[in-house]
Length: 238
Ligand code: NAD
Ligand code: ZN
Image (cartoon, rainbow, N blue to C red; front, top):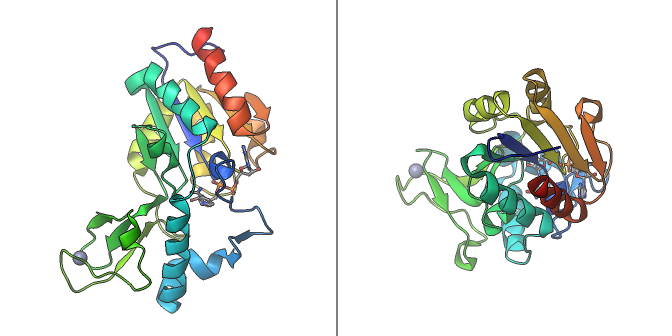
């Protein structure tokens, strides 16, 4: 496989790429995410029914970000971006900020970001990633002043972000690379079908065979932090 400077590469990452940094994946323990049922913490209904539980859950996830570091897989993607420049796009389902901390630049967080909050009233988005903002109480919108800020996270039953930009990039790429994603969550899991139908070469790296394993042209089974740095070096030197 030759990845030249003229190739367009789209990478889709999932929770598995952050596993070696110490952030638990979704399906690590019987469908529970950090000891919570998904329905209790990651749906609009959960936020309506028990906002304090949802707030506490995301504040814990945010404080965990202060304790973890990017791993070699995040850094390998930065290296690929440095080589390809504008021909590289990283789409992540992850809400952590490890790609940014590995200095990736062209990143779309299709499921939102832990380090941001959004006003329920006016919709404005705010950064909050210092220790001072890890409060136990809800934060009021500094802009309109009369609404609560909610996590800037795409919950189940909500629309992922920036889908037109994502579809355009996937339809036009030469290589579509999935890393650390189980292929269970749509529409992310369907992007590979679009890439394939547009004649992209589809490469996968995952600890286990994902649900859409058969669609990949090339599949590497194992840990992203071990496999990806070697693969990137190989692609860039061939
Ligand atoms: P998932 O949990 O459904 O699947 C993760 C996959 O990664 C699994 O198939 C697992 O075998 C694989 N994996 C585990 N360790 C790995 C490693 N070291 N190297 C390579 N692969 C490894 O994750 P998903 O497909 O991203 O879907 C889960 C949803 O949950 C996402 O939408 C995301 O928003 C959210 N989530 C995000 C984070 C995060 O931001 N880090 C963590 C948990 C869940
Ligand atoms: Zn507001």
